[in-house]
Length: 203
Image 1 (cartoon, rainbow, N blue to C red):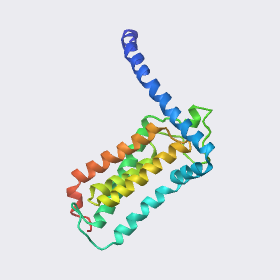
Image 2: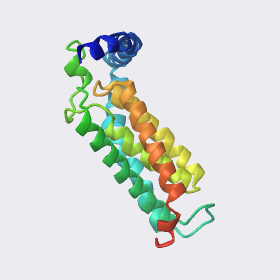
Image 3: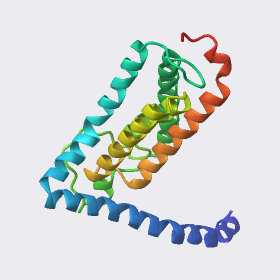
Image 4: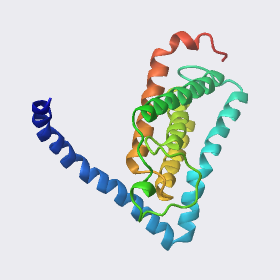
């Protein structure tokens, strides 16, 4: 056992060498955005709005899409698009829960006492970002449904949510990137492999 640990030490050391600059960059971006918000109150308010409230506005188009008259979409209809978006959100949240069960990453302001976040109610786990995950799940799913113009607007909104979560000091950039990747992968899988489900969904 001791021999195995000794042989693994160079690999562990190399991993630490690679990860330490990433961690430093992660925390540095959070500090820089918080400082920008401190120097420009309007920017702090913008970050706060994007971080805490913009996700709600990304959900509203789904209600409009559900009630909209049918139009051409290269994959399936409006209501199917909304249902697939809901499936994408739920499956992405399941992945987040599994990650949280295996590993809990503390929030930036817990690991770095010099990072003082804007007031926000958050759970202890930082990785991946739940807000970014939900926002990008909606956007990518709508995009893959064939509603490209709406999907592009939703992706822009999800990006603002992501920037806001870092800007108020409750997430690292890598938390955001991970949430966006999980959302993309789950949306891609569901739309690629979910044809057997789609035929049972309303148009």
